Image (cartoon, rainbow, N blue to C red; front, side, top):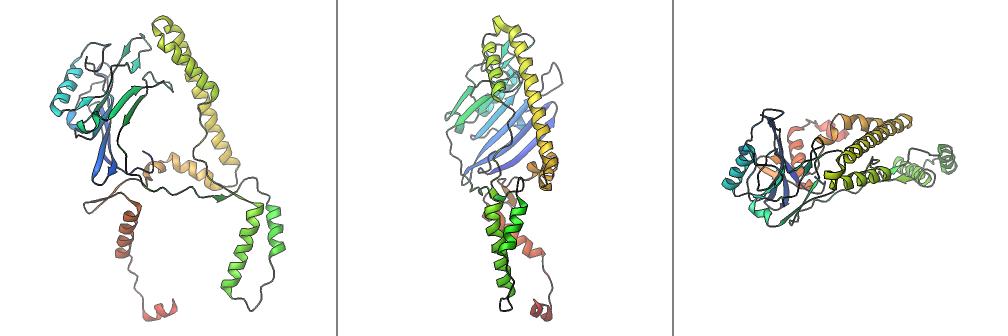
Length: 342
């Protein structure tokens, strides 16, 4: 979820072969869209149960995922099965609507058969304002990506701009040192400590501006999809469209694409670690360690804050609550002498 959209985690479960993750996205005052990701294991490989009570069925609900169920309502390639009938009954009872247009969402590598186990379901408040389509596969999955566009404008949060930082790599520190020494003069007795501090700081900043410079952190890391991999993916996707006559060639190209993607991901990972090892900036290595430890998942500034039955989505409201709470627990006893000393 983009950082300028407020959200709230509402449910996450994995039981009886059914995984669900439900999140709400803020679209305006008192308005939310319920987003639910679903995976239900295939009964041929694992015991699993379709549990509709775990899925949102509000007018502003969007339920998507691999249901491993088939029905003529959304799959014209495979015969109806018992799970497909269960999903049909649930849709009828809740007045939810299927967004799928009948296109296949999966191609079996073992048989070349097409199917549509991936469902996109919307409530009445979203179904008539949503468009659904499959797009060209990107990675190595045998499922096609699905693009859903909803005619709803979310309420966007202000996002802090990326802050420039002093450069740490490739700096001529000797020039910086010489520049500072050339401009620093002896302090006079008439100058106060505050005046000396301001002058010294200004000297450091002025010299650093010309000899060190600043850089803005990049928006994204190195991408593993290189031009050569994109070309291979296009070739694989062309073969997929003619799978009935070129299944063998498609399977061979799938393996080639997978090998190249894994190779490029491994190389990107090695470059990341090598850069962190040779840099004098220790924070780079700590950023990697923290990211592996799950820090990004626990740091979501756009997540709504639940406090005393209130749901706060904006940063100012969160900051006010934090300040009030901190003030209530941080009483520091001070004597008159302490205050005078301060």
